[in-house]
Image (tube, rainbow, N blue to C red; front, side):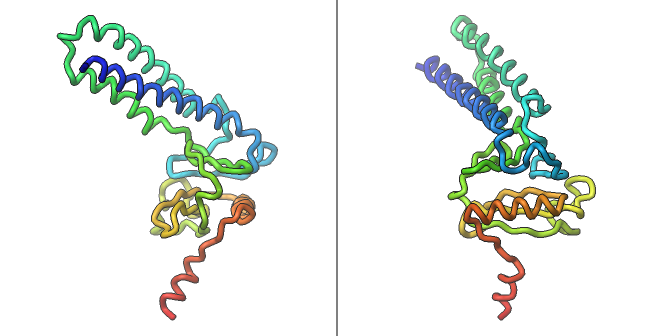
Length: 209
């Protein structure tokens, strides 16, 4: 029974990894259909909390690393699934746990930095977010003391655009945009898709009044 449970656990985890691989590949291939950023225009630098956003392509460095590690881990696991039954009595639980931890670590760390907007949704660091799942966004300059200050070069020249994924604004996704025209383009798309711009200063004034 222990062997069956272990086999199933390893297979389930790696099936999730393979599913994630094809999901991200699909996300990248949808890049040319994005409303923003458009491929025919340069919008300046854009960052997420994970790093700089590049135009989606199967030649992206992050994607190549993800693919290489996934293929390598599948080969190692396939070999392990063949040899574990043979040497079952000699296998330690620590070895089995390592096999399970490899894909989990990959899943957490090997994320393709991404932000682009499609007609019915947008992608943020591989996460698929529908318009109906967000209600508000905020726009504010990155200043000394901001959470993004010093995160990347010349950070004070950027604008933080934060999308809130819950009503109480406890959970959010942030992008950092350098080009003012790009900020306005994203703002317009957000408003067109039903998002309300949250004004922090207005809320503060209400609290003091």
